[in-house]
Amino acid sequence: MNTLRNIAMVLCLGLMAVPLVSFAEATRDAAQADNAAAEEKARKFFTDLEVVDQNGKKLRFYSDVLKGRVVLINFIFTNCPDACPMVTHKLMQVRNLMVPTIKDEVWFISVSVDPERDTPQAMKEFATKQGVDESRWLFLTGPKENLDFIVKRLGQYTQEVEAHSTLMLAGNDRTRHWTRVMPMVPPQGVAQQLRALAEESPG
Image 1: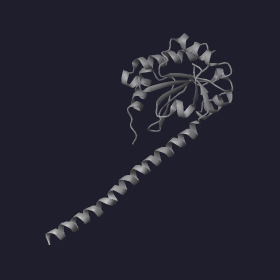
Image 2: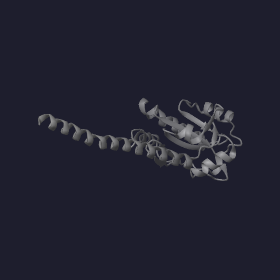
Image 3: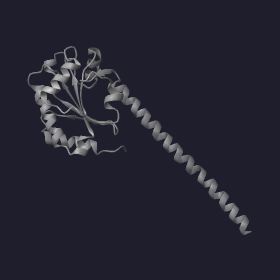
Image 4: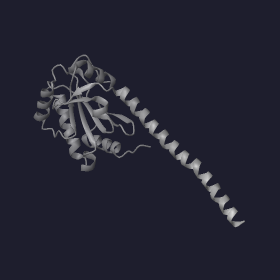
């Protein structure tokens, strides 16, 4: 009797375990599907148009620039006499205020609003002139139609480049959290916003 009871108990426990394993697999598969769907949605929104960095490297805007990263995006043109250099120096201050672990986590993305004149060489010269540490800082240009579309999608397009906004965008692609960074926020405040984004984890 004891032997039969033990066999029955083993069979019962085995049958109970099957749904739990199946549920765990289904949950994992659902999470992977959700992540894939969220990534594809982000790719469609931000677009995967081709851009070119200051070193002449061709990149896809979402897949190579934004995917999986914490980023701060600002908008510049290299012939800008005042505002763009000032914002660039402000962002250099922001980077200097961040602790190394956060600094290494955040990418700065400067997007041209004047791609016809902002060649990769012009972007490189602008970065060098401003004294930018180009590690984890991309200066993006490329075909005008691509850059115009991206800037429009990010809500910063103006027909007159001199009238472009100094508003910045910050986001954590892993958590899908995006926010505006107002131009009057001091470097310490911007650094705090970026640290908060970098310390987020997917829910």
